Image (tube, rainbow, N blue to C red; front, side, top):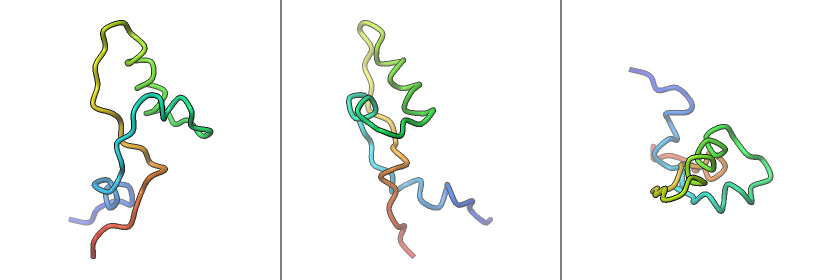
Length: 59
């Protein structure tokens, strides 16, 4: 099974908090959705994977 380009690097994305997403200059749809989710009173989260922190995968 061949991985798509996104799945190839998916495990190397860093998890970021909503504060990082708010400060980001190039906000993505995933980050905006996470900001909206975390803006609700009493919301807890573990972070969201940021595509801007994508690194090279192991060969």
